[in-house]
Structure formats: C-alpha cells, structure tokens
Image 1 (cartoon, rainbow, N blue to C red):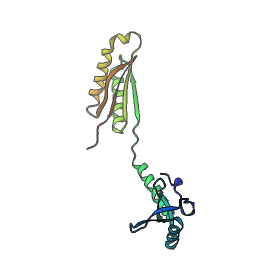
Image 2 (image 1 turned 60 degrees about the horizontal axis):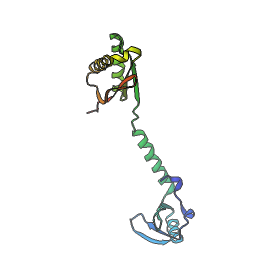
Image 3 (image 1 turned 120 degrees about the horizontal axis):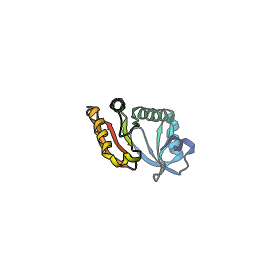
Image 4 (image 1 turned 60 degrees about the vertical axis):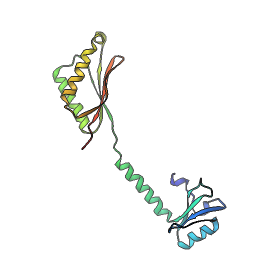
Length: 171
C-alpha cells in the first residue's frame, strides 16, 4: 500500500480500532483513546490495515516510517538488473569477415549481460535455401564458444530465421 493511502491521527474515521503497541500488545478501543495514547508517547497514530475489521493502527513516528519505506524502495530499485534484448541481423550469404565482426558483437552483448536475438533475413530466392541460414547460425554459435544459453533455437518466422541467446549464469 502506498503511504498516500495511509491515514494518520485525526484522519482515521472508524469508531473502533485495533491498536498495536510497540511491545506487541494489542487491543480494541475507540479512536479517541488510541489517539490519546499516541499523543502521550509524542508519536503519530497510523492506520496500517484499513481493510481489517476493525482497522489496525500503530503508534509510531510517521516521518521516520515514511523515510524507511522510501529507503527500502530505493534499495530494491538499485538491486534490479535490467536485461535488454539486443538484435543482430544478417543475411544467409554473409562474408567470413562480416560474420566474425557480428559474432564478436554477439559475444560482447552476452558478456555485458544482455540477451541477444540473432536474425537472418531471407530475400527472394534465398527463401528456397533456408539450410544456408541454419549453417550461418551454427557458425555464429561456434564462434562465441559457450558464452550463451539458448533460450529459443533457430526457427523460421516468415522471411526471417531467428534464435535467442541469453548470457551464461555467473558461478
């Protein structure tokens, strides 16, 4: 639940609430009595579970609570690894040097942690010789030497043959 949905102190509209204290004790009481306890402690009364019957409230420092939640969100975003899908396009009649060059790029993408989609485009009469595409795909795989895990083996999709590779897991 977002902090914006949390009601604090006088914003709580229920007649009765379940108050959870710092020591873990809990009890059902009127909002005014719970608010009194919070003011005596110099803290805020925060509604943490409004959907419960009666709603659950806690006595805590709301500013600190919000800061901790934002910090937790920031840390979780920091730890996320964004994986992009890079694409390398070729033709079945690709030259050896070009194949080396493109294979080197595939390897670099995999090492940097991205997935790679290797696509071969067939034009005109090339569609009659899709086995040439399979040969090119095998050649690419032999040049990147086990730096990959194959997510999707080479397959025809209309005029294109493609396969998807992902980086090998770190040990």
